[in-house]
Length: 438
Image (cartoon, rainbow, N blue to C red; front, side, top):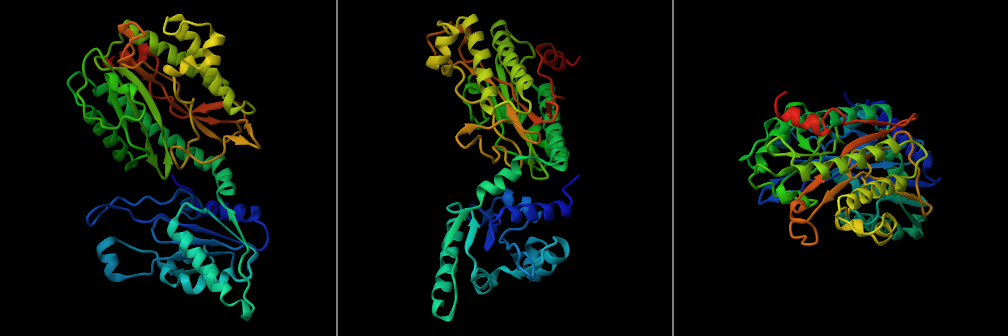
C-alpha cells in the first residue's frame, strides 16, 4: 500500500498551476540531525518534500519551473558514491532521480551553486518557505547576489519572494482516496496497539513497559516509527498534557492515559484512550470518563461537511461544562461558566487538530478571518478531555488526580464522517470486558 508515482507527478503539476507566471519554487529536503557525538537520529523526510516527490534521501532540493521548455521539474540530490554507499546505503543519484521519480532534469547537489543561479535569472519571483531553513535563506540570498552582480551583463534577478506554505498546505489538507487508505491503515495499526496495551496492563508494570508493547506492535506491522512521542501517564501523570517521561509505576486504583499513534508510509495515526490499571473503573473515574465520552460522541456526530471547525470545539465546551456543573466541579450556570471560561480549569486545550503527514498537520483553521467549514477529505482528531489537578483543593478529594482524554481520527466524507480508529474500544463495559479477557 503506497502512493503511486503518477500521484506525485499530479501534485507537482497542481502546485505549478497555482503559481504565477514567471515563477520558480524551491523546496528542500530534510537534513540529517546529530543525536550525540557521531551518532545521528534516524532520517525522516520533510513532509512537503516527500508529498511532492516520494523521494526519501537527505541533501536534496526540488525546483518547480512552470512553462520551462527544457523541463518543468529539476532536482538536486547526492551523487552516486560507491564508498559512501558501502557505509550508509544506496543512493539514487541524478540518473535514478530521472528514471524512477519522473523528474525532468537532475544534478548532483554539489553543483547547485553553479546551476541554480542560471535558472533564477530572468524569473520574476521565487516561491519557498521563507524563514524555515536558515541555511537555505542564506543560499537564496547568495544566488540572488550572484545574479545582481551580473546586471550589467543583462542578468535580471527575481524581485519578489513569495511564501510557498499556503499553496502547498492547502493541497495537503485535502486527502486523496489513496491518502485516506494509508491513514486508515495507520489508524488500524495504532488502534490494535492500544488494544494490546489494554490487554497487558496490570498494577506493577512501568509506564515504559506499556509504551514498549505499543511500539513493538507498530514495528511488527510495518510502522517502524511512532508519529510522535508516546504518552503513557498513570494516575496524576495523566493530568500533564504532554507527559512523555513514562518512567513511573502503574498503580491499582489509578487510570492510565495513553496517547500513541504510528507513522505508516509517512502518514500519522493519533489515538488516546484512558482506562483503569486494574481493569475496573471506580465510581468517580466512571463519572468523568462517561462525560468525556459523551462530549466526544457529540462532536463526532457534528463533524460533517459545511460545519465550522469552531462549532465542533464549541460543542465540546458545551457538553463538558454542563457535565462538570452536574458533577459539582463547576458551581455557576452553563452560560456563565462558558462565558467566563471556568471550564478551562479542567479542559484547557482545543477539540483537536488536522492530521495527515504530520501529527499536527498543515492547513489554516481560518480563511479570511473566519473559521473554515469542514470539507470532504479533511482529517481531524476529536479529543475532548478533563484533567483535575492533584492539588486542586477546590474539589472533593475523590476527583483529584483524575485525567481522562479520548481521541479518535475522523475523516470528513461527502455524507458525514468516518472514524478511522474505531476498532479500539472506548465504551466503559467494552474496556472492562477486554481487560478481563472476556
